[in-house]
Length: 250
Image (tube, rainbow, N blue to C red; front, side, top):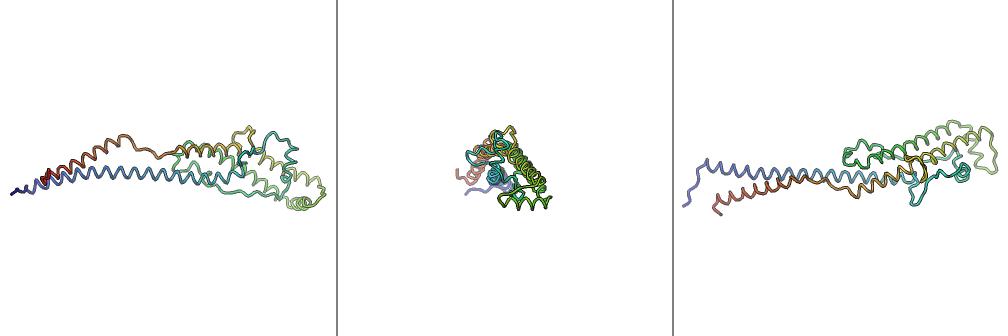
């Protein structure tokens, strides 16, 4: 008949086995937590990119983003613009702006470190949008601050033929000038010398986001984790081997 070990020996043995298995289990738990955390960070960046792409789709209409569009070319003369955009004289001409909260808060992203390659293009795009919308607000303020001229010009523009007083002509020319600055200067086109005009800033940002999304991968775990994986596996096997010996299975 096999004699049983004394209580002290049994307690010491099982405490040792429990310690070995707990160490292996602690490493696996830590590794799983780190892996899940990095996967969550990766998914968070992808979700953010989805929102940014949605806002870029909205910006596209303002930035002449259609395929093959050259935007508002600088080669156009003043007379060309007058002929092509007679509506720029209209005080009633209204452009509806939109919100773009992700582009406005680029530098406050919690994922800023991961998004480093696209931060600058998005900041420049936000700046270009802000300038366009600020000048548009200035145009609306100017047009609406002269109610008598607004009313008389609007009525005359709806009739043909029409003649305008000197004050009305000055008023219309100022409105045209503000529209020209918004579209011709701030939005710009393919031949714009201003690299931060909306036309060019939008395309650089869109290209940067697409390239980043195609190459972005979850942050890999450190290679030295493999060593601890091996050590953890050896500890777990050692614990099982010790238990097998205890029960005389081996």
